Image (cartoon, rainbow, N blue to C red; front, side):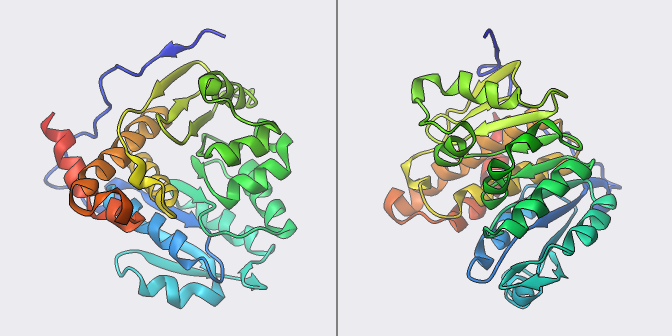
Length: 291
């Protein structure tokens, strides 16, 4: 397998904002997830989406946690979905599909929880929603349970597995030295060639099965719960502003790691938490703009 190495290509950039622009010009993000006990994950993803430039962000969460999620950030909107046993109920798929029609980008998975009902929920939306979609966390677990759905995406898809999540798809342990080829093979499961795989970890790999890029930013302090939810939000925010999926994934992983590198100078690698990455995102964007 011969892939085009984009690692050292110029980093994609967002265009300057027009003086007469308004929030509608920067996209509408729909982030789906959350469950009882995991309200923080969806909130982190929503906050990161906002900090990455999306104009409007709505978090679709089970009714039982809506108040908690809404209390964590006043700048995003929340929408209550039917719930069952602390997580989203199956009938809510109709409502999410309808909301997606008025969205620019959909993200699904942070804090979603795991249940056979949710496996079918994710599989259906993966097939039916034609808007770009980022899938992370429990959304990936659901896709691994219905592996065939990877070849039936309704539109552009960005999958963001860590090595453990990746192994659920391949049913074998990931060898670090072969991670580029392995990630490309997962992307190629989609015969429509609309899938990007972001294989997270030390030197994250971004590939669409034809080209790849290795991220060089980041540090061990980012090995903390919620960091992946932040990355989901960053990529979502960039795609909301019209950035092509491969470029958004490549720039998103760079900014994610850069925010971590800036944060570690202040809080150290032991004390870093996911919220620190969001706090340093504005500086990361500014730093990128000066290079």
